[in-house]
Amino acid sequence: VCVRQATMADLMAMQASNLLCLPENYQLKYYFYHILSWPQLLYVAEVDGKIVGYVLAKMEDEAEVSHGHITSLAVERTYRKLGLATKLMRATHQAMKDVFNAKYVSLHVRVTNKAAFHLYTQSLGYKIHDIEAKYYADGEDAYDMRKPLDALPKSEEHLQGGAQGAGAAADGE
Image 1: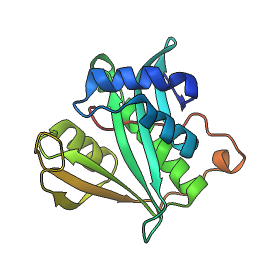
Image 2 (image 1 turned 90 degrees about the vertical axis):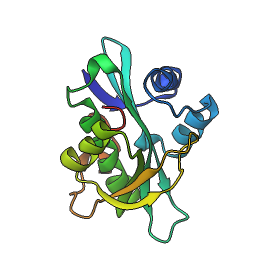
Image 3 (image 1 turned 180 degrees about the vertical axis):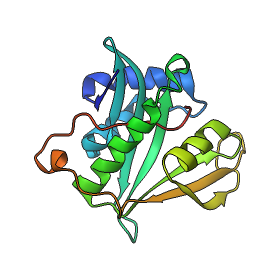
Image 4 (image 1 turned 135 degrees about the vertical axis):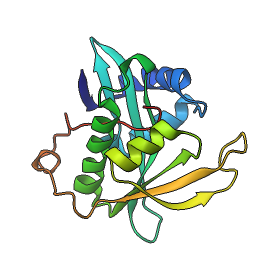
């Protein structure tokens, strides 16, 4: 399994993985918006040329404190419990810190998504910041979660212009 930075050629497979794994789906133009705006923050997990997971992330530049946000994270069911979600997430966390000097990263997760909640809190160190009532289209509440990035050391990899390889995954693992 290879975790690498996503390319334009990966976007259709990322969208297909999203449709397969998650109830929150996005139009292809939303993936294009992310990769054109923050190409350093999108990562995929690939097995034998097939995309089996991804993380879609962005920067919240307009905020009072510049921070990253995880838009979507998915790993196909047969590839879960292999640490891919953790690798995808760690890769994007590192890029947020190295490239954009993000102070923290935020995400939303369904209050009923116990597997993702465990991943975020136990494996990745996120904490609940707030609860957003009726956040999802079906009316379910979301935990607004945050993870500080201050303690994360800067990586030489991103500072030299490369962004291949770090690792993590999240929503749906």
